[in-house]
Structures are given as structure tokens and as C-alpha cells.
Length: 146
Image (cartoon, rainbow, N blue to C red; front, side, top):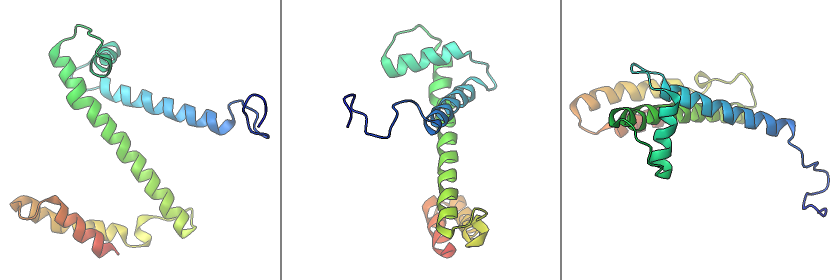
């Protein structure tokens, strides 16, 4: 360790990978905020920011309860779930490609898509009649995909 606490061989500056990661996180935040602002009812960015400040930090900004409810209960949760699903799909693709050591690997290669469609076909009648709930069909599809 040097006097500044930086390990030898590390410059202490933001590297190219760190800068790309910072840009990706900033782009994700902008996308989530845009997804929260855009909708059937136009809600300005400052209203979204004030809603977040009220809910997260108890800021006390005066806001319309309807706009605050739309942002907090519907749009923000939908945007966060969409971002999370995209991240999980990206990670699963990377894992599939690295396990198979094939940069062109796809879910059809191992029958993962066939198992998912089997689970969806089994799950549709179960959801319609509410016999087993939604987890039964997904479990059957997961097992049949193996």
C-alpha cells in the first residue's frame, strides 16, 4: 500500500471500465425516471422528484395526492420491475453463454424455451380455475425443461 492507501499498480483515477459502469448506472436512472414521467397523464420530472423526496426522505413538499399516488404506486414500481427483469434476463444470457462457452448461445439450444412454453400451457388452465396457483405451472415447466 502506498501512503494514500492505494494498492501498487492502481492509479487512483477512474478507469475506462469504471467510467462505463458509471455511465450505465446514470443511463438506467434516467430511463427509470423517464418511464415514471411518461404515461397517459403527463407528470413533470420535478413532481416525480418531489414525490421521491417526500416518500424517501420525508421532505414535506406539497403535492397533489393523485399525482403522488400515480408516481409512487404505479409508475415507479412498474419502471423498477421492468429494469429488474431486464437485468435478470441479461445476467441469465451471460450465464448461459459462459457455461456453454458460446457467444451465440440462445435458450433454444438447451430446450429452455420449450420448457417455458410447456409451463405456460400447463399454467393457463390452473390460473383460470385457480386450482394450484401460478407456481405449479412454472415448476412443471422448469422440470420439463431439464
